[in-house]
Amino acid sequence: MEGGVRCISSTLVLAATSHMAENQRVELTPWDLHFLLISPIQKGLLFPKPQPENTFINHLKTSLSHTLHYFPPLAGRLATIENDDDTISFFIDCNNAGALFIHAEAEGVTISDIVKPIYVPSIVQSFFPLNGMKNREGIFKPLLGVQVTELVDGVFVGVTINHCVADGTSFWHFFNSWSKISRGNSFHLSKSPVFQRSFLNSINYLIRIPQSLVKQIHEEVILPHLKERVFHFSKQSIAKLKEKANAEVGTNNISSLQALLSHLWRSVVRKKKLDPNEEMNCLVPIGARQRYHELSEQYFGNAIKMGSITMKAKELQGQRVGDIAREMNKMIAAQTEYEFKKNLESWIANPKPMTMASITGNRVATSSSPRFNVYGNDFGWGRPIAVRSGLGNKFDGKITVFCGAEEGSIDIEACFLAETLDAMADDQEFMDIVTI
Image (cartoon, rainbow, N blue to C red; front, top):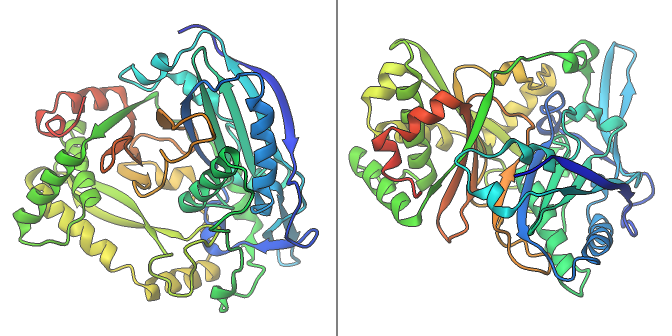
């Protein structure tokens, strides 16, 4: 692998047309505002190099412009209203200010340089635009950034979307729509995004957030030197683990992902050498679209809350995967529509935007989902080879879950201290279900 990433060009891509009225705004809900002080979502796909090479950049810009017709918030900016009670309110101004599009080149870097190493190479972080920004900066920075980085024999399409505008479901809705428009002759989407917030009739917009909380954007969290590794789990090994976990506690309720996350969590705790009475926390994103009956599957925005379970190190080490997964299953099952509504009302009464300081610590935090359509994103020159995430919101204990390239398989991108990842690789019980 040779040098770094060189920017060839940087432009703003506008929506070709907009089906929203000029300068229409989209309100931000507590689910959206919760992410105000952290970083955007960054996910990207590695592809073989398209042929011919000299036309695909302009093609991607054109198809992006047509896609933004359906996703006008992504071509807009955040806007604010400063209230007279020392609070501030945010909304999305669909002003078609444009999405950032960067064409770059990673000289001497090949596909093998990205996918073959045990650890994710640090150059991958340079394949994403808008690194280092916080979501609140969407007032003056694009809400969507795309970087197309040419490798010797491949292309990496890195996408950054402001987390106040979209969650993982909406992120991949946009990505899937863009690739579909890019590879076809039709600009019609069968699943158009829904921006209406009418399902939240109890909310009195604009939501007021104390200015003092917003200023926390300047917080400095010093993170240790971290490494990332992608662990691959085949459909067969996941099925065996799920069967084992359910059999251990005499149930059929534990899902494949719950069993897999519990298996990984046990390994992390064993290898961190914690005090037996030290508490360890596991955060799991829980979707509202499946629970909120007024919420469309195509709802564009954030519709998640974080569920949490806490156990002492000695409990995690002493219990079976099924015991831990059962607790996770109970916690997730308890998240009803009523609980989601109560959470919204509580947040409005006492806004508490997430900060990096609030999510780092003695925990494993899961993001993304194996349900997202990752490998169906064909822009017209073939399916992706691999998926990777960017630098945003990474810390010791961050777990990013993707579907694998093979149907039914799962990839987990694990971000930990190097010594933790090395110890996990030496954990025979954990590695028994990992496909090398």
